[in-house]
Length: 263
Ligand SMILES: Nc1ncnc2c1ncn2[C@@H]1O[C@H](COP(=O)(O)OP(=O)(O)OP(=O)(O)O)[C@@H](O)[C@H]1O
Image (tube, rainbow, N blue to C red; front, side):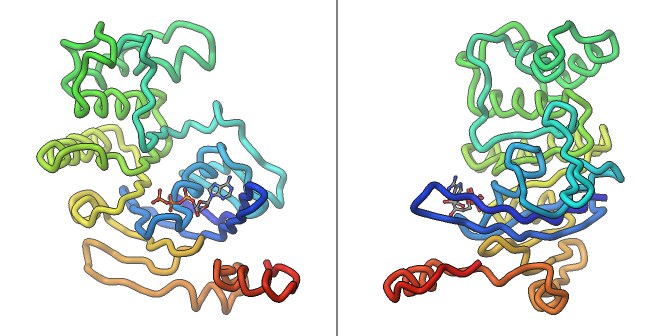
């Protein structure tokens, strides 16, 4: 079960964005879908512990990673969350194998245990990377680099795999191949996935449930298998767990009027 209820605020001095996103699902693959700037990446970052929320909780498979009320904030390295960034972010000076092993060796400054080494080899095999294991990422194609990044995200036996637009940089044919490889590997390792995508084909091919994210909130839940959906925002407002998002237009009008900022 993935249970996320996050409030966060990011600001760079001139801009401010409020996140108040809440969703829960026990589906194997959950997609977050929505327009650019809606807060999807911030949501994944907060789940991984890379953004500090101001309130709420993150529970994965019954384990609490963050709970503002209870003062729980599990450090990033102990969350067992696999994270695939929008750009693969492979380490250019490390071989494919060392890139895959990175999460296991780097945080703990040690060699992988025999069981971990076995998992690394199995993942390298699953993604068809065995013949490149000693190569550096620069000598690999985009699709091969993406496979390395996926294998690396899965190496720590994560309790959830977070994917930020995993196929955006790939050509359509490669996308299709990687979708089915990913689906197979995640089913094989029983790893639930939360995936950001703008691509309806990703949703249809991989996701069981989609949450539509708009202006920092989950506004709609769609059951892909049943082809059914429901609005979430109305319920959210009735229960009062989330403030209505302050739009850029409203902020601007308030500034022009010299009125205090809301939210
Ligand atoms: N440090 C920050 N300071 C101010 N605003 C920020 C900061 N980080 C992110 N934002 C803003 O927060 C909003 C949500 O960002 P986020 O990256 O989560 O969007 P997204 O839904 O993932 O978009 P995309 O689909 O384009 O990747 C954006 O408007 C972004 O500009």
